[in-house]
Image (tube, rainbow, N blue to C red; front, side):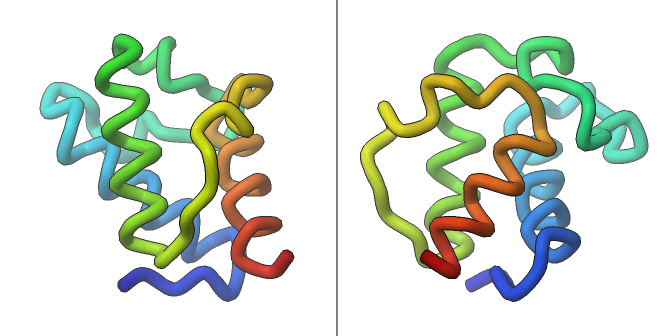
Length: 85
């Protein structure tokens, strides 16, 4: 299980899942400002990345809550809020 205590550790979990799913992506290109779509993730890839990150962090919530998330930073902030909500 990942560490959900701060945004940096959540970002590390998200990066790990991105690299696992999107094998062509270099971890160094994953920034808070970039979107999963910009990294080349299709809708299935995005769902797998988010689901994997949720599982790693021990979180559970409806995927529809992520509808307005537009980049990695927003995803990290959202996951952090869920971990501490």
